[in-house]
Image 1 (tube, helix red, strand yellow):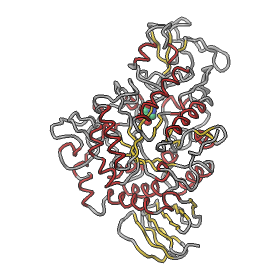
Image 2: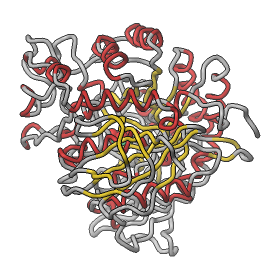
Image 3: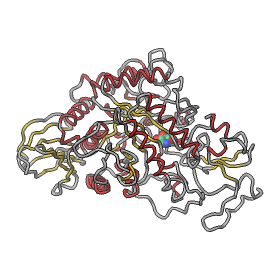
Image 4: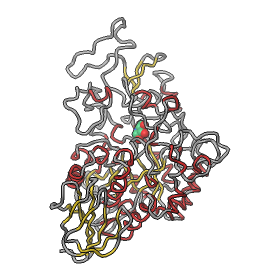
Length: 569
Ligand code: NOJ
């Protein structure tokens, strides 16, 4: 299969040259006083998104009807808006208002699992004979041989075939077994996440059809793209074999409880996944005749050859425009390690495919907390000057930090089940101003759904707009320079070798334009030997710009600079 919609090197699409800004709707702007952000709140901030930031697309985490056990990633209706966020009419307004400003809208699509309150699951669990029984993954106790053909032992006191004899050893990402016993029908159902998030059975053609219909529903409403939740989870081993034990410690990996004790060979990422995404992509391409649509897949795979298979191929068919690249989230914050991560990724990407980078999202710690406040600007400069599409998480532009949430106020089910993994800390309300509730919610709101950061009275958008040296001022200049210089948003990437250990220096080039990005990861000055003259376009310190002789260039502690080369060789 071929398609002319895969970008050529001269015909760049918005999702390649642009910047994606992730909004966690619950935490962006509350217009009703409920303490929870809503779609009208996002509409109200579109001028900020467009005029102040100048990003190109927004990705909205789920706003669908949901019991909110996993804050919207437990979808009870794929084709509506939860009343707490507004209405479908609000969504249509949001798309129209965004498009009027040239902002694209990407929505979350959660194909692996629904809520247990979705009518499909309610039917499915109602009886073994129900026509939707097979829409989810059901299994008898002990009905499967293990990897070695040996049945798993029955826990003492329980008879074979009944509760307690788990179908296999698969584990939930959120802790414990991935199987939940359904007493009424005497079978287990699979949940890769919470038990309130049963996995859909993508091997059933009816499931494929109804789920693709949900994609069409949003395409018809004008969305420009999808972020696909745990995209590689949808197809599992059809024989449901046990996962083997994990062989080795994952490099740079934060221990993740029992889940890490197994090698997740069989519970996700089955090769059949690819044929589903080829069809998904074909549907997006069909709709791209009117306006280019895109999909970015959440793929937590760190074997780059395997990861790259989620782009698809020109021969077999394309899949994701972008499989999320989370390498920088797993890399120690050291210049050489970061360079290695970037180079490995560059090497793994097929020549026709497009890279992308992520430094934060609603599942990860904030940049300023992970890398230090001093390094947050260097990190932003990296994210926004590497070759590929950056995704920027709301609040990073004002340097929001992780918020320590007292145990009694913790809400995230992951953190409540697996200590240390709580994600509330990076989901706190956006800090807009020194008004009550940080301008996130109206004054009459008693309390936002999560506590505000302690620094909200002085770290907020309004103050930073007035301060020429603020994080926001820095981000605004960085985003503007990225937009202005084509070498930065679509040029080639080449790392420089002769640089001090603590620095990562690379060039981005387009015909007639070479830009050097020099990043110092250390709290000590470093001397760079670059050739020729250059013009500093931006320093993370925001205190120098203009012509410079580069033969002996000092990069100050924790400083990054973008230099336009004047006579590059
Ligand atoms: C990945 C999402 O980013 C995360 O927030 C969610 O909890 C899981 N998928 C389950 O949907």
